Image (cartoon, rainbow, N blue to C red; front, side):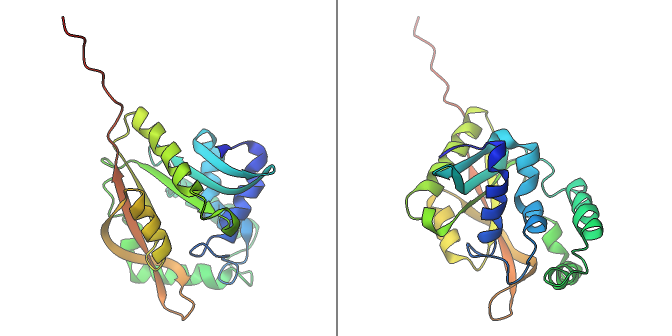
Length: 223
């Protein structure tokens, strides 16, 4: 494991795409790698590169963690406007086979369940966030836990009170993993716009939070 470098950008975006559906490739639902990565990891790489780490396998990134201490604008209006302009209009993913169905379905899902636009997380208490993904070959070696420990140690040292994340409500392996890392669920699962299970059911997002104790304070020496 090491800090992210600009040269890792393409590898990280590739890992994002190849693990985007509950740890499996997302291509069956959304076939444009660059557009998908824009939604889930590119903002962090471009705006918070100093808070990203990768799992290195002979010079290639095969896993990563990206995050922001303050939540940033990763899910904000500016980020989504940039996606709509660059990918939706200039690159045509709204009408392109392999992406159009997912995006229009996501719009319908949002119209039916507006809760997906309102996180149950108290971002005053849990301002930091994270996304972590590993290719299958990098799993099972404690690297995901190490990535999270590295990030939460930095957050604690900076006095950040808590961190949050979201994962598929149907991804029992991810839920077990995050629970083992000290995260607890908050709120109810909400619609995960556009995504469908392999048997056609709507997917959900489950939010998790973790309190951080903050930096240790040394006791004053006795007089």
